[in-house]
Length: 607
Image (tube, rainbow, N blue to C red):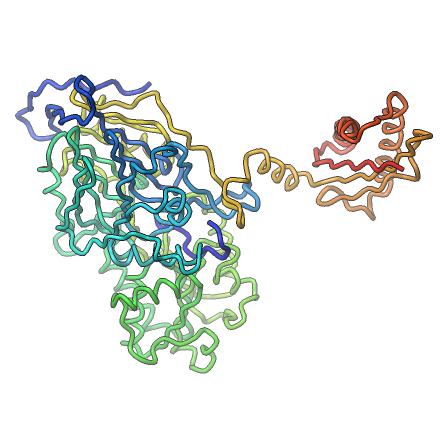
């Protein structure tokens, strides 16, 4: 998934399918072929059979937090370590990372971590998790490793020397890590240096494209990447295919169509051009820079993650701009409007990103004008629909020229659609199919596509996060065993210290506010001195609710005196029960009076 890359580390932190029946017979007709399941040599004592275990720690019940463990005997290889951005009700949480408690005590078994590409939902949790695993060897293409290193520096300055890296210089490179033989294949995606991974074991060969799309030649209509060689890999093969687009039946635009439309907009725009896109769309940004040079325009990049990504890509030689093409954002007023292109983050409507600051008028250098052309060159991340709709509305209020994907093909998705998934299934003809990377309904729809293609239903495994799939010489199956995949929240410097109880408290405060009461008790007379002090936040407006405020004071005073009249605590720890009783009683009173349930924090002072 193309993530919201405008968010960065700014703090130092960080019915179940049955087993297949392997008859060994192959059908004569074309289509999916049933292959015999081969066993492998066991490194365990005689009589015990090693199994290939596949354990997805994230990405199968959400869009993000992608991480998968592959385990064979005492050897473990991990694919990706992504993060998930919080939902609106997860207040104060910076992001969510995979739970790696399954690996506790197995840290030394981790032979390698492979990164498929540089999006945050695939590398964002790497600095935190690599540290917890004592920095195992990591593999990736040059751009991917450069982005991992940058995240590492943000997490712990001057710490990249802790990383043990192997660069995938060529797709023909091969590596062995214990029982795993690792190979690679080309994929199309929306970021440079994305790579598909092949993990060969004695019990099966896993084919995992990571995130992918099916770019087609605009003249022939044929896919640019040839996936047919994957059908000839050692059997049985297990295809783990990203299925985000399983319900997408729209025709995909080609790169040529997108570039033609953007070229027209860039060359004909009368005013400034503001392009909102993902910071990870490095290849597209590089192309826009070239198009700007052809039109004699200046380009200003804005957004920390975007500038960082282009800087990394420039050092690797992936982005080449002529001297003077790129200017600083505060220099745009030094040039005529029709000579300016601003490429900014925030096309998903993120509150702290550049586009949001532009439309709220808080951006220091960019104030939208009616004749400006605003282009949203990005897809909608599932869950962001309402936020993006609000962004569009505000842009339409301020500009007469807003262009987005619903009216023109100005973005090519980095994810295959329904037809593309069918094509991959028919081309690779895997023995097992595990749809991944999406909400559960997306995985189910992808499974339906396979069954419609006459794929053996027992060999289509729809897993939940943490559910362990096993493969051995008798076949493959989704087991009842599950690894712990409960959320690990990152909040500031805290990693995992914000649990569900803390989050629930934040949700209560966000929904109904907070009420604090301070009561002074004379321990000799057992009477409340003066009226209790009431402090509220997000509950009621004190100045316009004096009647209710006085009722609260009277109620708390009366209840407190009733409690201490029965028993005056002698020890400090006994006052906890008094506070709890005041809290519960006041909660019932406030609900009766207001139908709200604020968080209540009583304080009792002994005098």
